[in-house]
Image (spheres, rainbow, N blue to C red):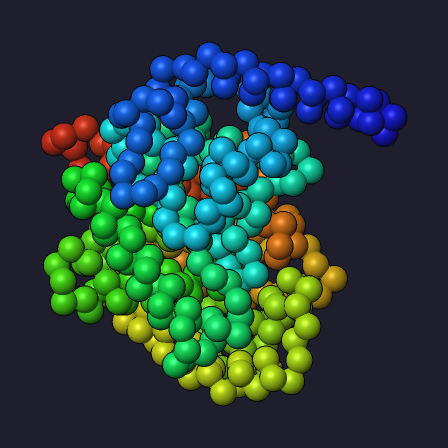
Amino acid sequence: MESIRNVLRPRAKQLATNEIGALGSQQPQGGPSDPSNLAGHGAGTYGFERKRPATEAHTVDSEPKRHASLQENLFPKKQILGLRVLYNPGNPLVDIVFVHGLTGNSYRTWLHEDEGVYWPVHLLSKDIPDARILVFGYDADVTKFLDPVGQNNLRDHASCLVGDLAALRNQDKCTDRKIIFIVHSLGGLVTKKALCLSEQAFEPHLHQLDRHTIAIAFMGTPHRGSGLAPFASGIANILKACQMRVNREILKLLERDSEVLADVEASFAIWLRRNGSRFNLTCFFEELELRTVVHKESAKIEGWPQFSIRANHMDMTKFAIAEDMGYQRICGELTRWLDPLRTPAGSPGLLHPQKAL
């Protein structure tokens, strides 16, 4: 069986490369050159517009490119910082925004490297075709991220997320469109902080995240729980899993600034109480690891749905095929959140979120 795989895999990848070459030369309608598929404000697009028939199976080799050309198409000249539009169907129902964690980035975090599948584009754009798909990137240097007085810290990243998304939506005249976040690891902290900053903002246009975010999918995000020590320990475990040397200075930084991180959790808890009647969240936690990075107890928020993904902390964001159970669970939640928005006029709208029993 292994010998068969070894023969078929190179052939599959060659077929993928050939198909991409054909797509690039034909420039299909609705692709990158279609003005209706472009979003301004310096954001890029990656315009896969071919809709998959209901009977067509997902295939890994249908569109993924080799890493270099794939990254260049998604992020020209490796521009992985800031907000970027990956897919725009023309008349989106919702904005889905991906936010990576520490030591990750907008490209590598969501890429299945073995198969060259960047699932926000290759998979999600087909299963949720009425969503505009965006990704937000930031400097994921841990020593800056946890510094309360330095530049490029948690607050700065959250503020940029609020401002960039509001500016893009203003330019595209879609300020009332609903927003869903898919966040990994400590990217969840950036998103929590962004919601709180949006709520507190003086400028009206910056309130969009606060008023129009309807759901968050947390993937391996450590939530504070009942104590600061486990929270800081969970962050240290994430850094170790990213193969970073967690030396004494970083541990002291975690201990010293744990109150700053705890303040993010406390502020989000208040925001959640105010907005829980119109808001959904689901927590996903990793199943595999010799030493679990973010334990199930830390990765969940009491009273809200939680599901496992059979992968370790770093691989839980990488899907090669749509049949992957982790991907299906995420898609299932996205569909549940979006179905009320798809309800015909005059029918009941978004009801109170379905919480776990």
